[in-house]
Length: 279
Image (tube, rainbow, N blue to C red; front, side, top):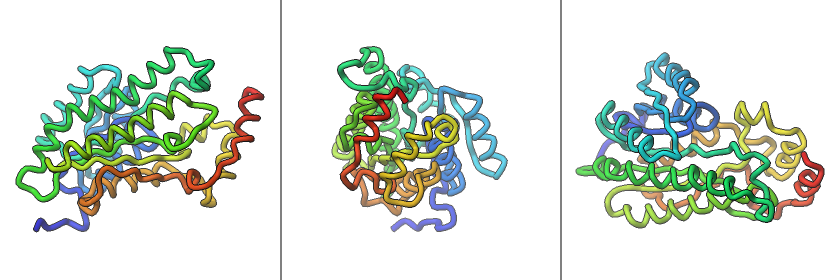
């Protein structure tokens, strides 16, 4: 039986976090580093990712920022190669990045531009799949000769569990990410790789606090069972648990982290009124 370092539970492990320039990704990268992991921060926005990496190294952690374009397989392959080449192994892949640039163009199917649908699936689903594909050989290797092997955590969304009148492409892509998660858990479990998904609700990142319409926040807050909305650190702790050996018997699962929003019958009428008014 392997012993665990309770003070640095991820010591000697190497993690990749995509979408790590800010929000949930940045919080996750910092927490994994605080728990002992060497972290590769991947994002299409390199300079902000480098700033987060510098924060980690300033507190004595090990971190490297790499530019990543999830629409480009060569960029994904290079990320994996850089992580392994720099730190010698790969134990954790946190697929957190997604394309949220479509904004209000990602509405309902009747008005959907094909460009919106294709771009959303290219990044959110195809990019996640390719990251898993190129990481899996290394994650399998990480488990050789050990009781606990490599792990993948995919970020889906609570919107993948329910119908909505907005974000049809985004929610469909995230539902597919859930099935991808289950498929990898089934195909690679006996090879020592665990694969789980976290499903955030509305999370108050710095970008959300700056750009979120007040009315939308009020609607979501009224549907949330907790007296507060989630913050990036709440999701980071969920990822850190799934990445750790404490979750060694957890695979193929969806951990919903949304303050209970998706556990009850929601009120869609306020959303419908907001969209109708163009807000």
